[in-house]
Length: 160
Image (cartoon, rainbow, N blue to C red; front, side, top):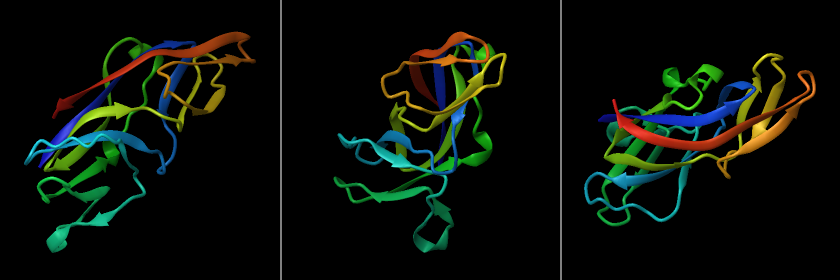
């Protein structure tokens, strides 16, 4: 069993507390089989709501899958206590926002999509359903009368 931290980095403009919204937030990942090295072309997603029993009654995981190449059963689980928001003071630095517990898998890519939320840095104006698929997002904070944005979104994985 191996833990991997997803570290997020972006440039934040007048915004803070960027975070995934809800237990149904979809973490879109590319996962490599630790046995044969196969990396499927398609992204797969996992959520906190998903729970699949492991073989032999050893608990459950967010996703259990059989490798198409070597038929090995692998699993990945989102570690709820590791979830953290990305704040204004974190801007332009890598910060761990979630950790995954992996058995036989290794995350190799992350694609942010819709489902993020944040708030105005000074006004706490809520911004829900932020889509980061294009790696940039902009809006306008009416209370502060200023633009808000998330730019240059990137990530990396680190073994814990």
